[in-house]
Image (cartoon, rainbow, N blue to C red):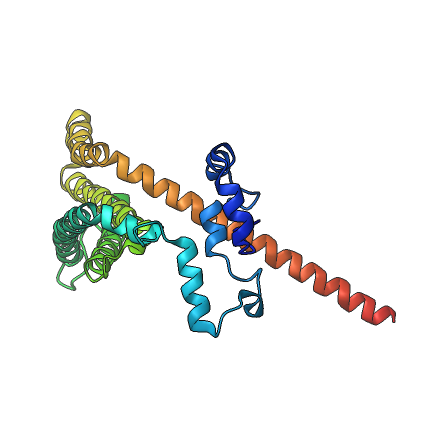
Length: 272
């Protein structure tokens, strides 16, 4: 409270007690705020109470509350200590996004070419010969899904490459885009393998059952290996999706409550 309301005299007295300061340094309030958060808070004390000659001097006093003996704020200290980590993170995420965008572009190219190359060929009217087969529907649908997911993944990775790569971008935006891009790329690869499997089965569906089963296993093998190798990234993507779902759920609840209050207010107006 001394920090929140800028009572310097009280704060200096409390600071002399090491037991109090060490205990409070690790404490958080009901809103998850630490002492540093209260030092950054400004709405609880008016400008007139600062005994300053203007907003510029008030801001100077505010910054002094957040600086250490070297004149560094917690944010500035964090940036100085993590400069090398930021540099390596920039290089890693750029190289990863470039590599994945290349793969996504190749998958999109293959899916686009497959859309105009029907298995079994076309008749004289340009209609696919095997269009009545259920595997042809699987081929067409999976090819469309592969094209959509690969192009979306490509756009996601390109958005990473155009990011400013600041510290705040690494808190949420860049990791989420990377998880999303990997998930879309995985689904596009899976859909591509389904397209390939459906095309092969259309051509050899009269062969023995073991031949078809072998094709299924071989088609699923590369997708499974890719998914297992990138499992930690998909776990992070799952956490991001869970967080987004939670935010959406809270928003829906708030809208429902607002709608309910509005209905109650309209009902009271009618009664009056």
